[in-house]
Amino acid sequence: MEKYDIKFKKRLGQNFLKDKNIVKRIVDVVTDKDNSLVIEVGPGGGILTRELCQSFNNVLAYEIDDSIKDELDSRINEFNNIEVIYKDFLKSDISKDIEKYKYDKLYFISNVPYYITSPIILKLINSKLYFNKIVMMVQKEVGDRYTSKPGNKTYGAISVILQYFYNIKKEFIVSKGNFIPVPKVDSVVVSFEPIERNNIDIDKFIKLVNDAFQFKRKILKNNLKNYDLEVIDNVLNKYGYNLNSRAEELSVEIFIDICNQI
Image (cartoon, rainbow, N blue to C red; front, side, top):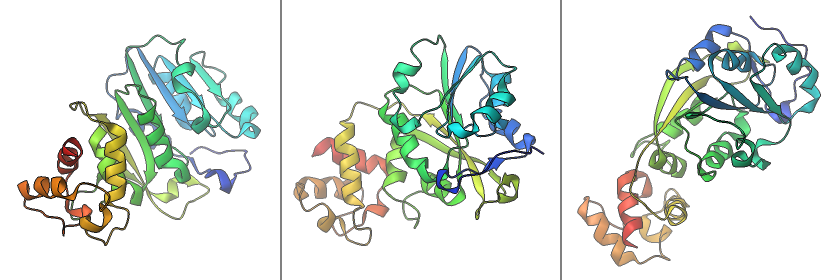
């Protein structure tokens, strides 16, 4: 079990893994590691970072807390294939930061700070970079939302948006007792594999989905009243729905069809 000589910062969502076996399972979610670059956010005490360095050609890590620099550097100084940028990942230009690297496959593998999980995944999408696979540890309830299907209470706008871009799979549960300090909830490791889709106006699609779920208990006729409802109703009718249906009933494919028609 890993031990850390660090003063943990609750405001930064610092909960560090201590079980090396779990770290190995996270890294093994990616099977093809040759000629690869992996990005990590929030390396913290470096338990995952070290495993990444041993498994991948190059590792680029972002750490917002420069007060742990000495501790982290001491744990990874044996590796020459790691760069740590002490900066807020959400304010970083990923495309520029990886320009100097040569790689065949790009991965994102991280135990991300839970309070910025969705902003991180949306930043990866907006970067327009092609990630061969994304592997993230998230709160269990967040993993439930990401993988939820129509008709489930956890199905929402983020479910639709992420499932447009990725096939999402819950890999395995990680008990809260495997962290220092111990968080309040269990976690889950989730993988994202990109889906090839026909061209669509992504900004329009995301706005449509967010508008449709704006007031979750309201019907589509009310949430989408600023759209051409006749066009939307015609699409819905093809799938057995109508304007009195709710967004939580509609699959990703129906939202894509609506977006293409409006």
